[in-house]
Length: 129
Image (tube, rainbow, N blue to C red; front, side, top):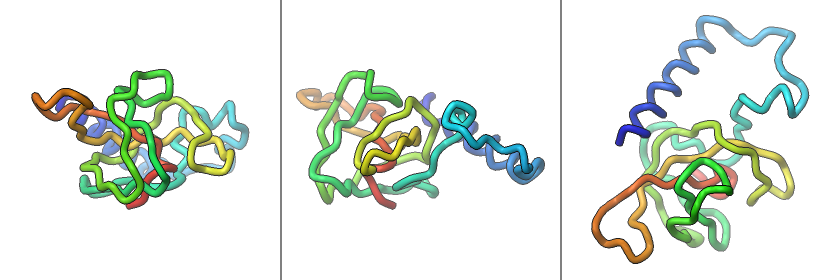
């Protein structure tokens, strides 16, 4: 829950910054310069709702990156309860080779762990709103 609250605060701060200080002509144009910006591809989970898996199967990770452990495998058409998109490690999943770094925090019931819900993360390119 603490991660979700932090993610919500970060999203709110980013939206406030975008309104107060609009983008300028010097915006990042290289992948290196854009590494801290969310590359908005795929689902976004704007209103704390659900996203639907749009690929045959997608790993749900314990953190916002493919270097984290897999906590579950979600399949095409499955709906996942979500929180708004966050920036994480870059990847090329479900996007025809396009580099992205948007991750959707989701609630999951881990494989073999019927004792409760925990946080997981899916690549934004593998889900739709």
